[in-house]
Image: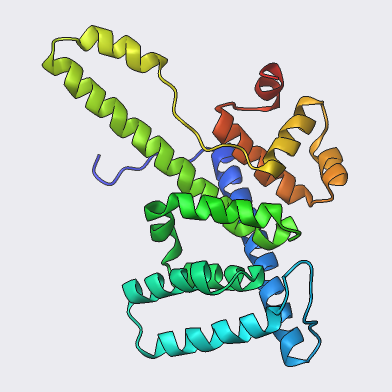
Length: 246
């Protein structure tokens, strides 16, 4: 029937609502961090040396804000994206400024497109965040967005590869052989982040979400997000399957 769409069952609907709620919490944590930092500058409360944000964070923040104002004066989406990413890559090493730049690109709807085109750059940027002393809540929104896009790209490449293999095997009369070959192939998923590895190990040790949150000093919603990412990357459906693969 034209226009027919399979309705979501109650569990799917609940999971979608929970994922949206978690994403809102993560985005709110990011926005609070950026707003509090800017307010601390306006109130003259920042320090020139800070082991979390890096040295000269205040000056770097103000320099970026001036750069952004100049760039908005003659706004063009492609130019804005190119110049902002170049600024974050070459003109600053201050992590709070990098977070602000990513937030700006996301707010303007330019981030996902660039993640697709420059996946390695963004995965490397995540590693930079994870190796720093940044609290995970400050970049968790971007981590999940980048990992999700990366996972979707891996799955899309895998599906494309299957189609090309199928067509090629038909051309040489190997349809049967191709079917069994493709059945055995597995997608190449992105690796687990450092935090996801910790959560995975604790799950395999039999820890509950609450216990994991207490051990890692993170929120329960963050544990749920990491758990969902782990299931997707490892191709398992639940805790039982994950523990069976330990």
